Image (cartoon, rainbow, N blue to C red; front, side, top):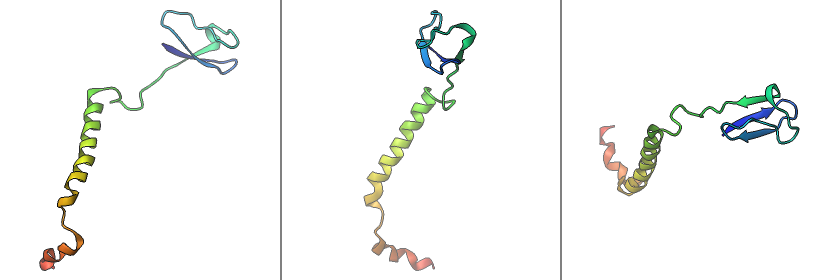
Length: 84
């Protein structure tokens, strides 16, 4: 599917591959239509790299939840102050 914008009425519409684009509102064709090029927001959009990054960040947030109970509480920190 390709997206077009009508220069006459401003309508944005999609057309199947191999079909001649015609504005559904004002029936404009040819030079009166502008092809809209859609670019991905990231160069990694839709790639395995993006999926790997999402999994890594999800794992980090889950790991911080699981280890939070292992960290010393504030009252236990006094034993670590002997270096000051």
